[in-house]
Length: 115
Length: 114
Picture (cartoon, helix red, strand yellow):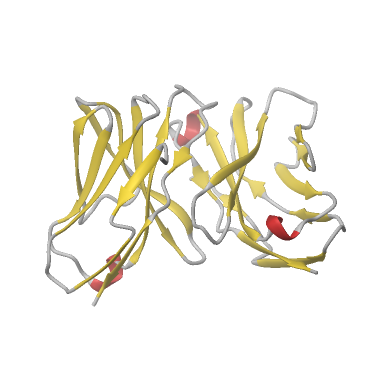
C-alpha cells in the first residue's frame, strides 16, 4: 500500500529563520502529485504548495519551496523567513494512480515558531 | 461566508446515538469528500462522491453512511455512535479530476462520543 511518512512529529524554529520539514513516500508510479497542506489552530486545511512528479523544477510559492528528490522519493518543505503565522500542523500528501487518485496523507508535523 | 461549511462545528453525544454531520459548498464542485482526522494518523478517507449519483467507500467506511442530497450538499451519518468514532471530521471538495485537484476543506466538525 502507498504510504507517506513524516518522521518529525514536531519542529521548532526561531522567527525569521529557515526550517525544513521532511516527507518521504512510497510508490512505483512515475507520474503523480505531491502536496503540502497547512492546518493552523483554526483547523481548516489550506494548500501550501503542489509538485508534479514529471516536472524536474522544484515548486515555489513565496517563502515556501520544496526539495523534490524523485529517485529518493523525498519531498521536503522549506519555509524561509519564518513568521509567527506559520505556526501550524503541516501535512504531506500523495496522489497517484496507485492510490486510485485519492490523497494519501502523512501523520503531520507540528511547527512551532519561537518569537 | 465560507466556501465549504460544516455543521455542527462541535458535538458531544452518547454511545448508541445517531449523529449527522452536514456539509454544504458554494464552489460549484462536483467532487465531495468526508475525512476523519485522529492525532498522529493524519487524515483518512471515509467516503467520497464524484456526483449526486456516485458514492464510493473510502479507507474507513465501516460504521458510517453518507447521502449526497444535491451537488452542493453531502452529509455523513453515524447510525450508532461509539467512543472510537471520537475524532475531527472534515468535508472537502475538488473541482478537478485525476491527480492535480486541490482539495478545499471546511473548518471541521469535532465529535466526541461518550
